[in-house]
Length: 179
Image (cartoon, rainbow, N blue to C red; front, side, top):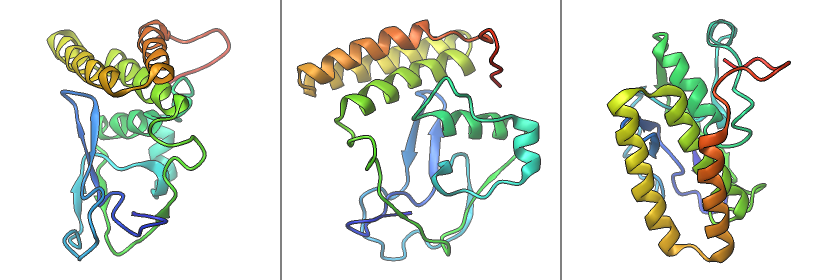
């Protein structure tokens, strides 16, 4: 996947670090010189461009609407890999991606809110015990770093995201089904 405007690599596959609940985009920002031209399995891929068999969605269930934006694909792919499905990176397929073009970019209040809220929600939903505690502590450290670099509006959204991430219900809400 290449950035639409620069044609630099957006990601050449990805990896979900389950200790931190953060996805690492392989090759992000690099010039494409063929360094990632080998097909291989990865433990994460964004649904920005992904082919899924109908069977996968029937067994895994739909995307969890509580995320709304960001981490909804992480959640779906994590649940799929827990059921034994694998993600295959195919470098021969190329897509041009206008990342965050509808949401204002990585410093927009929208992005700051949902990416951080949903990280906490993902940790709460999928991790247990000491693993959950470590992931929340790592997220807390990351939040402190972000707070230091954010402007006032972004800081307010970060606090709201953290608060809401802990309050978002983990169980089924009346009339809605979540996988």
